[in-house]
Image (cartoon, rainbow, N blue to C red):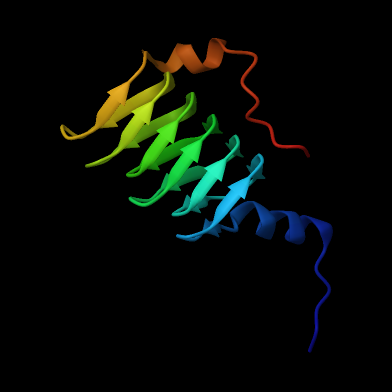
Length: 134
């Protein structure tokens, strides 16, 4: 009836879980996750994820973002470091530098900063803290 979860199964389920910061929620401090994160509220701190970060239309991040992929529809004020693809949608507002392998930006995006792009840009940065405490 009940089964014991082994450590490997438990770690695997944690890696695939998604976290949601809902609208009207404000978190002050850094966030670290092995799974996806959806931000519809406000984060005042850095965001670290080994997966994808989605900032919804009402989402606001005041800090740096380090992740594998990101879709941004809201606001980010800080440095964005993405290993793979960064998608800036419709009314996104980004104030800060971007370091990414690939970038897709819709025409109505507001971006103020420098963009460093290409597969070797992210690989050469040894100071990128993508590894969440293991």
